[in-house]
Image (cartoon, rainbow, N blue to C red; front, side, top):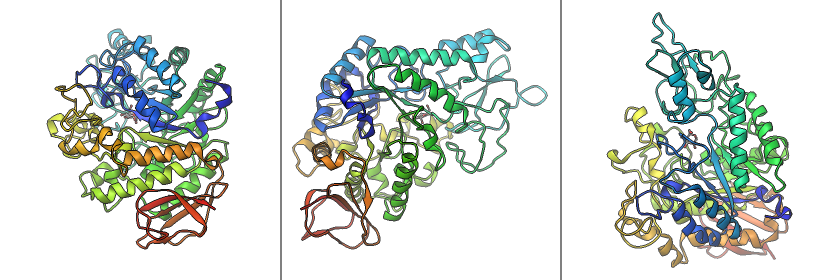
Length: 542
Ligand code: GLC
């Protein structure tokens, strides 16, 4: 694609394809590249700029593919490298860029390197590529330190010869040793491999976790946020300054290509720290989890929006916005609960949710997100208004969280249920008739299919299509101009240059619309120039 659109990523709308659940071409119950290829025209019609594909590499799927056993190939269930190349070319022909997921913090325990490390034994060079240590206690039967794994339990597993290896996630995901030159060289090469194949960028998994304090000191904390290390300075494994050297090196690799290749960081870090990842010789953008996790309330939203824009502007990076992804409860469900933000799964899972209310608010949130300056992420199915499937049978649950939490946290399968495309019975066009999706779809998804939504002018899909069309057509969306306008308590009103306004009413009173404005798009009915509660509108000054 041309240099003229070099800065496409600064305002791109990127659609997240959780490939396992997107579309199943061969009928084995799991999504695949054939399915994705068949749905590319749908994505082009939706009006997104790029797709980000969750890991599609060979993997035992102990963590849905975030346990990679070969970084230069495609999982046979998803297809072949040749199909991947065709998919990339077809996406490009439709004007869609392609971003892959790279998982550098850990490999699968089935990766050749880890198997070699196990076979070679303690003290071997093969073990140096991971973080193997002797245990504590007289016979070494205690883990080397007190770190916790993100899915529950200790972050160490013992191997038969008595040593332990570190895994910040599941035991099937051993952490790599990023102090080892071979690890750097390997990932340099993996980046080149896919860039040479034509991919436009990478989403970097656990970008804040790759550098560890070599002393591996105890955390000594009983209470802390497992993902961010909240409340602890100089954390021994999250957000250490060492990660920035890695990203400078990666940036140089991306910049070695004549057309723009980009990175987006998945970095769960404390407020103010994200900008470090986006300095102009590091990564291009990062997910805005503060926005995703924020309750749908005007005050907190305004704070997060201000902070995001200001912090990142200081390093010249655009903000991004996201409401859902494959790790979080779908926002239709969150916004229908008494507490609309994201806290810990233990507090929120199964909390009662009013689906009609959640849907109304999700519509308003979509217009808010898509009106803000910078980039935005859409998680597959959110454009269909899908809700979290909270009643999956326990026997169907596959997220390692379920086992690792000793069946106390159900985990993330409820947002990963295969997409309903058409028809009135499962598999709803996800795969050919008679195929059985890897997670069961709710029966009432008849009314949530892309086919049903396309025929319904009031559907979530039509709202997303209209919003994305306007986002491209109205020049004020192109720039990064943004300013708040005065508005009553519980509401948000802002202007994006050239008289384009977005008004969001999260108060319990109707919000009078500004004078001399026409409504371009609204998330719900607008009565007599009054914007109802839980509704948003895009307006153009006359
Ligand atoms: C990221 C991914 C998540 C995965 C974890 C470990 O947070 O989004 O799905 O489980 O990393 O790779």
